[in-house]
Image 1 (cartoon, rainbow, N blue to C red):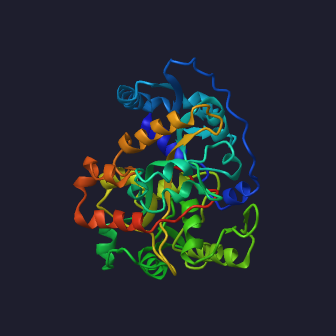
Image 2 (cartoon, rainbow, N blue to C red):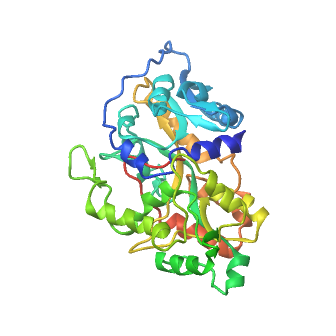
Length: 397
């Protein structure tokens, strides 16, 4: 259940640039205060915390430990599955986009996917006054992750966990073609050259693609940053999307050329990743992009290697983030911050290999991270050190 829900949620909206265009219609709006009951004087302050059902046991242990050290605060867990209004139908999650707003109205604090829209910021408490405390280790977060939660000079969440996106490749296919493995710092031109050699065509039909993009929205978020093209006009008040500029159009055209000019990539799917999955799992892709937690699954099928995303003018590697938040309507901001700060310092992801906590010091303690060979660890570290920094919209956790 845990792996299925994470995978389904992480793939929501990752199939096309049209998601970015649709989300650009969202506007900033202040959120109403959540209706949190007050606690009589002398009793412990009750801080509600919404989390996904399959993670409840782990959070309950953290809450118990926190309460032992903070007897004046009681953490009450509620279901984020119910409070968010998100529905699961078979293997698909359905959403109306208001999950953050619903959660902020239902709980003082919550853990949720950090796919923040412009309309969400007003429902979240600005954490800047707390983060500026010299005792808070802001430099312990992985590069760019805290910036993901920043908007108009405020910080509206803390990184909980992250999933780097990587380029996977079949070592046997590279060996058979005599092509060197990709390394950190490689370029899109090098990807195209390798993919052209690795693509196979029989009777006019592509039987193996050199490159399959399993995370197109992540790629389309990273590419403009690699070319130094802004997706948002930060000089406007409020900032507005600039998706219709010639510079953005040129970047998108470069991406489309992988399929339409070079023929090394299938056309990206809209609303489905069925073909992509079939090509990758069927051994008909020499290189492909995917989330890092899929590494073990791919390694069970073939002798797989990993590389950071290729680069243009600069490096920018997409990733998905999950965060800890405080509702703007909480009546106990100080107690809520103590709980969030504790979570940030002690939370370890329950997810499979490839998922990292927001804090680097905690990541070093993970068994899967310590087991990485030198080459693979260097790839992760490079991708983490060169992130695609998000604006007011992003792909997902």
